[in-house]
Length: 237
Image (cartoon, rainbow, N blue to C red; front, top):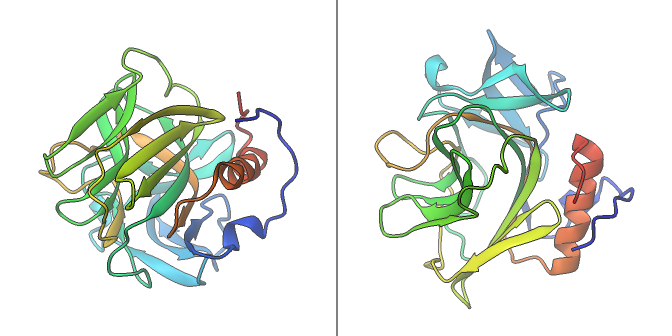
C-alpha cells in the first residue's frame, strides 16, 4: 500500500454500506454527550443516530481527558467499556473496520464487536498485535515481539464470509491474513469486550472509527486510511 498522504473529501466515509462513523475529536454537544470525563453517548454520523453507552457510569469509556495527537479520543480502562449499538443490522457477514488506536498500558486488550461470544476485531497484547475471536474458539497473534502500539496507528480489518478469511492492516502495511473467520458477527456492542470473555481488556484509546458492511477493495482501504491520516495526524509508513 502506498505511504503517500493526500487530501480526501470528507464524504468518503459516508459512502455506500457505511454503517458506523464516529469522530470523538468533534466534541460539540450535537456529536457527544459526556460529563465527569465519561462518555454517555456519541453520534453515529453514518446514519445520524446516537450510540448509547453502557448506562453504568463506571463502565462508560473516558473522554475529554484522552487525546491522540492532540485530538480528543475515547479511553478504555476497564472490561465493560462499550457502546450498545442501535440502528445496525442484527447480523453481518462481510465487514471492513477502521480505527485510529493507541496503546496506553501494557496489558491484554482489544476492540470487540459483537455480543457475549464476540468477534474481537483488533487484539492488542503487550507488544503484540493480531486478532482473534473472543469466544475461545480461535486465538491468533501476529507480529509477536514487535513494539507497534507505542505510537498512534491506523488499523483496518476485513472479514470475508465467502473466503472465511480476515485481513489485518496497520497504517499502509498488510500485517497478515487468516482463515479464522466463521462468516458472521452480531454487532450488539462496540468497545472493549465484556468481563469474562478472556481476551479483551481496557488499556487503549481510540480516535475516529469507521465500519462498512462489505469487504472494501485495496484501493478503497488506501483512500480511507489516507483520509484518517489527514484527520488524525498519523503518518502512513
